[in-house]
Image 1 (spheres, protein in one colour):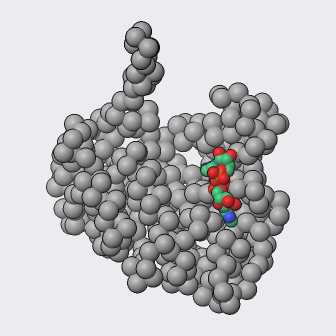
Image 2 (cartoon, rainbow, N blue to C red):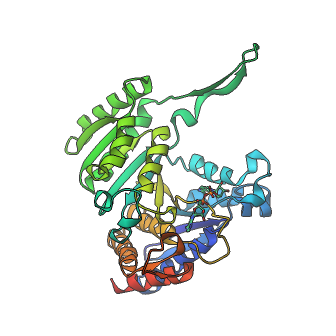
Image 3 (cartoon, rainbow, N blue to C red):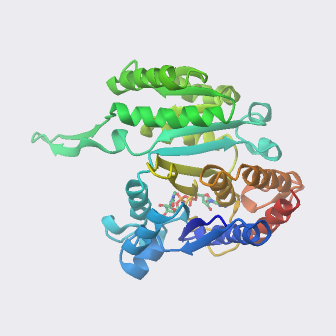
Length: 368
Ligand code: NAD
């Protein structure tokens, strides 16, 4: 029987509440579909700090490194605001991204028809929206050196960040975008600022060359990142896959996210390079939202972002495409029936809590 190793890191705040709903789906898939998930669980963020004095223990890091996929909830909260910088809750997530070498961040922006009215844009602009932003996650200005504040000695200081990309970093993120486009509408739009940035010139060249050499069947377009931001709110449905660097991706994926309604709806995946022997990519799946301390423990968090992250895991780590499709359809059908958590509540809908939403999605999933 296939064994699929999953490592769960529920984290803090609403993380464990949302993860509990995914656990039910895993149990069902094991019992009824022989999915063969072997599940282990660890601590990350504030909960890990309380137990081990670190944002993730070495033992849990090893488990994350050897798992087929990591499911991550959320970290942080006011309880840990004053802990030392190196062991703050977010350090656990950054360590995971770094050690697993997760260079490709996938942020889908899907607008469920039932939620089109909740978008800040006109419903006809977003209904049926399905775009995927592929953001480079381990390079660029967030990591480039020098990165410092220097004292100029004349009462002035200078803050420096360095935007830097090497060819291989652009090639591999472009490769991920082109490959994903082939499973979708076969279109990639690459965004940079080649008009004012040397790293943008190189980005544009390398994406163009990678396309020509290996992915000429995919339709490629280039757009300046500022124009891209404008187009995202003007006519978002023109896009299929957008590939961009760490900084622009950070902003553009948040813009795209808000086209679709609540933070509680947004999944993400972060992928590493394929293993030379097995061909499998290291992967971590997590909702975009944080630990929502304001609603933690109340049983009202929306578990959809976490469940949709698990659907991405089924698709990208285990190639269980039909199950992933069914789980996403189950979410859409439940929303269509007017079942809502508080964050996406609308007039005439039925408001439910975390557990009821999870149960409704699982019940629907079982029928598909
Ligand atoms: P947040 O995403 O936790 O919450 C923002 C708002 O959205 C809150 O009002 C919250 O109640 C609501 N919200 C978020 N997820 C929801 C859900 N699933 N269902 C219903 N409502 C939801 O962001 P924040 O308030 O800026 O940060 C809170 C804590 O989370 C901080 O400690 C922050 O550092 C941390 N954080 C962690 C991550 C992560 O773990 N990846 C990401 C962002 C923030």
